[in-house]
Length: 250
Image 1 (cartoon, rainbow, N blue to C red):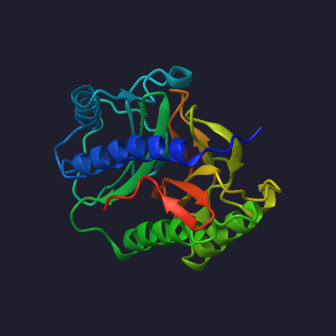
Image 2: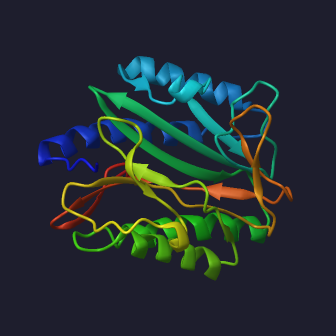
């Protein structure tokens, strides 16, 4: 069942998501050569402590860290380890969430480290653009199939391979709520958007034509052809006046 949020609920979600995006942009400044994914995770954890919020991912379904750090061919759910050290030319996806007074926020960004190739720039631009186009459709009366269609179409226009088996979700009092917000129209749910829905929309895509698989750690999703991947996410409220991006930094 999809829970509709009141205006008061959405104000709480705004605060949770404000913490998320501020911490993400703080971390972005440390995404540099020589910094390990583990160090980024520790920074995220300490920043949560300082702010009096809980890292939403730590322990969620058994995930061992506060932050997902996915580098290059890692698509999503990358475990931040000490030996995973960032290098010049990498692209790094940071996926992060917090719990604030029983409400959850969630967002993701992909960062280019120093100078990267035009292909990697196209990848990052295309995935972020697909999220922007999806958000434009978050009005009451539109359908999740339309959202999935525009994400997929935008990714294909950028000559990227969409990730269909992972995607977004509803969010609120739980970190993951219905509906599933897929990135591909062929597996999209027939759900009409209503005022009060809050969706975490998270397109992912990669440059190659291979498939994806999960590593033996049980979490990290990678491309089988080692092609690079990108991931962006915003939490968005559907309101009578249109979409409100809760995780947007002013």
